[in-house]
Image (tube, rainbow, N blue to C red; front, side):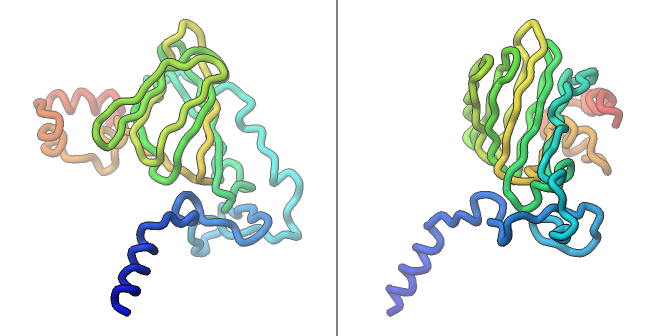
Length: 217
């Protein structure tokens, strides 16, 4: 009997459960999010009453306009997640439009709650991600080519063409989150102590202060 129980526990641990792979499965046709509702909700926002839902709740034009790339990195991401498009609430997916100036960079970052896939719509992008064994997988992509980044892994995209570039990305979460390494490390509030950063990067405090100044920290 003990052997059977142990075997059952092993199977339960080893077998992949779909609910663990992305956002939880919805229990209704839709749940248009009420973003300003302060009541407690797990893995999503409270639902707008069905009687108040309209067709407009299921359409979003936020990705139609080119984003402003006039910044230090030369890129911008226009998000189509649940915060911008409440109709995505509980549906387990979202999309972004990412615009790049020539030479623009979407700096190393990760999405803790989602795998990402994307297709190049315009230009030429150098796309890469790093495994937990510090192996870099990368390739230069042109229009129509796709990429995938496994959930939680650090990745980046850089415009290596002479013209503007743009990609559309998709995630298996309505709110994938983003941990952007340079701003997380050097522009957090409150800031990470210099002692931690100097030890991490094996540099003098003046170097850390100089980097922080570039991010307004």
